[in-house]
Image 1 (cartoon, rainbow, N blue to C red):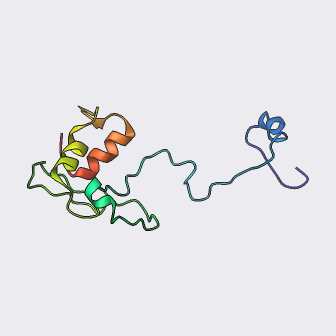
Image 2: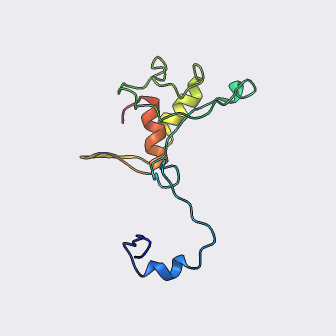
Length: 119
């Protein structure tokens, strides 16, 4: 109190006395529990792939039906993906449609959303 430091959980003060390092997360990179798919690269593109520093996560694509003529509508794709990779990303998941929308593993939700396909 003398130094104007307050703790919302006083029982944690004893545990804090044992710490050697404390990290503060102002950007949310340590505490953000969402998964963001930044880029998808096919094996044929891998040899020429270069990674740029990540920026903010892209906005979700507009919904569309998925078919070979339905190219990815988002910037996560480094170029026109092979049909097999797009098919894998849109079909290999454990998502379930409920009244609230798609429910499932957060990684599956993110990957499926980035394909621009609908379930």
